[in-house]
Image (cartoon, rainbow, N blue to C red; front, side, top):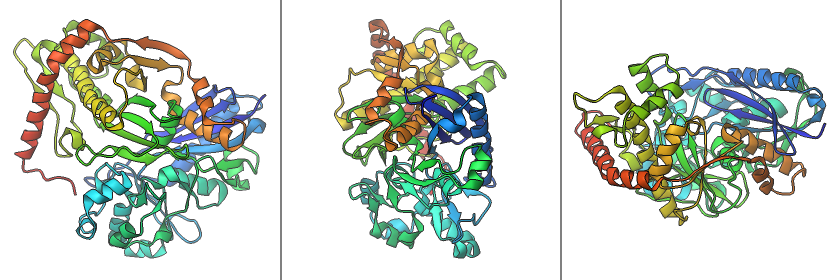
Length: 503
């Protein structure tokens, strides 16, 4: 058996473990879930110990699936959910059993932006999500709410970095994860003293960033026994999930773009310079590939909007069967328009107070029309993101768009996407394995097994290319103004509401 990389993707819903061969094939994969708890409005927490239990269980499972794998693993790398903040004391132990994850909005940013300019902060960091989501601001709330726990805190770690600590005993992070702290200067590749000073935090709280493929330690005996691996296996620095997914989606060089179509969806470009814009707020991370950046625009509710609609119209029905019912309705859904901002909008969509909208309903509107309006609404929302990210990055409008995720598996929805976006879509064999392929690439490059990240391309075998239908493109071009009007009305409605913007 040839060398294998153990790739661990620490996501919101669980840990995906995958074994990859040096030929770019996934030879085993499994997912072990863990819960998210919501103890109060705006609070989203997980327990790092449950991450560890999932990592150990998932690793043992994939090793058992491949005879000889235990001895063939040459390295471990993690992809980890972003924007989390794990408090660790001087002995490397958890300060608290639970930690806020990326979607937790407890961060205190207001007083910081009375000391530094908020727009300048964004342009420096590329941190285009709401400021309250970023660790530097969450840390201020943790300090205020639990002074005793804060007194014991010596380091703040991201999700995959805490697992790395458990694996190796080493405090380490990489540039991609560090770039999501809210205090990382993209231009210098270091933490920004002015931001930290305004936040009242010491730079020593954050681990020194390393390159993602760098080996940061080796597997300790206790961790090796928990995972079922030999002691001493090298552990690489790893990458934030956005960077690992971009790498695994062929984002190995300037100008590559892909669409992740899932519960939330985003358009991501790999470039040699950050793509920033104060008006639309693309969010930017340092890439796992040195010298590159990943910049994206997204819509928060895509697959989740469809799931919501399924639960309202036909609880328990398979999502694929629900999507097929959209064929009962013509393009334009007989005038029905759905604006998919059910979980709030990005800055491009009007901000976090915006909510979803259904417009153009009449007594003849049927279930098929509502389903098609949902599929078209998500497509139009992503069309906005694609047009803006292309314009900001200078990418050609006719280049193929690599698509991955659950939303790319429906022929009905792919036809709508291709026609609304007026872009050829490319599906490959990697699909939902992009993050683990990215992590595996870090092992192979960091160990010298691969001479460059370009080998990632070889893992992608084309499954399908969906070209735009000229008739559909023309029809949706005429309908685009209809969607834009509905989306603008949703923004106006939100502004008339007494609900305040999340701090």
